[in-house]
Structure formats: structure tokens, C-alpha cells
Length: 249
Image (cartoon, rainbow, N blue to C red):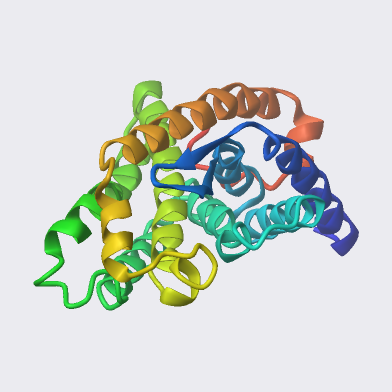
């Protein structure tokens, strides 16, 4: 693929993603300055359509454009969250599950050593309430690979839905990890102490997984007809790098 086509693909998809980012946000419980972008549901689709690297680039470009349109110190720390979601979905949709598995496992492990969760034996409850849905996503990563190898549309649809969920959960994991540093939770968001932050993380442990499931469903609902159109219209399918996608519905 020529460099001009790559630039055009990334630019067009970043623009589409940028439009999605204007959907209403959901403020985090206890920290209304932290916003959960419903539009970030489109980020895994970027990985699905463009592959892990170009999907990452398109999501990052879209996030930068959104930040430049509405600059805020509250959104800056989380600029890389949707791009890693696109990266992970790009890998998973092409039958590569080890890379997102290592990425998510590394984030979950690293979070244990941040001030909010360290020492882990004293803050295990906070850690589990914060990350149990992310740990679930970690366990589901190999399942996507298994489902994609099974014959039958139901397995492919299930793998696609789970891929959307995993992408959004990796986004959330990186966000939680970044927020767990005093330079962010205190320096930017004004938390008075680490105990307050631990309280924020445990206020509504079931709310955020529910939001991630809804984001996954939204991404799935968009991805299925989009992939079907691309598979039928050869000119579009040839323009996008989807020949190696294993999750074509």
C-alpha cells in the first residue's frame, strides 16, 4: 500500500472517529471531570478496519483533533486510551491474541505498584473492585482466538462482540493506571489524598463494567453491517486492509 493511500486511510478514519467523539460523555462517579467517551466505542472498529498500527494512528489523530478543539487538562492524560483499544482490536480481529494479552497483563501488573494499590496485600479489595472486569477481559482474550477458528456465524459474531468488549476494557485499564499516579489524581484532578482516590475507585464497581458492555454492543452493532458492506463492495474492500480479518460476519 502506497504512503499516500495510508495517509488518506488514516486521515479519513480519524475524521469519522472525531465525529463520534462529539457524542455525549458520561461523567465518572465522584470525579465529574473524568469523562467516559461513548464515541470511544468506535476506536476498536478502527483497529478492525485498518489493522493494529494504522488503527492506533487514526485513533490517536482523532483524539488529538478533539483535544485541540476543546483543550482541557482533564482529558490530556487519557489521550492514548482509545488508541490502545484500536491496537488491541486490530490484533485480535486478525487472529493475533498474544500481543493484547501481554499488553493488558502488563497494565494490570503495573497498576499493583501505583500509589493507589500499593502495597497490594493491603489494598486488594480496592484493586479487585477496580479491575475485576479488566481481569475478565484478560481471560476472554484467548477465547476470541478459539471462537474465530470455529465454523459458523454465531461463533464469529460472538468473537466480534467480545473483541469490542476487550478493546474498551484495555482503554479503561490504561485510564485507571494513568489516574493512579499523584501527578494525575492530585496534580490535575485535585484529590486531597490517596484514600480519597481509593474511595472513588470503589464507589460504583458495577457501573463501569456495564458501560463497557454497552460500548461493546454499540461497537458490534456498527461493525457488523459495516463489515458486510465492505465484503460485498469489492472496491471498498480493496481500499481497506481487511483481507486478513478473521471476524467477517
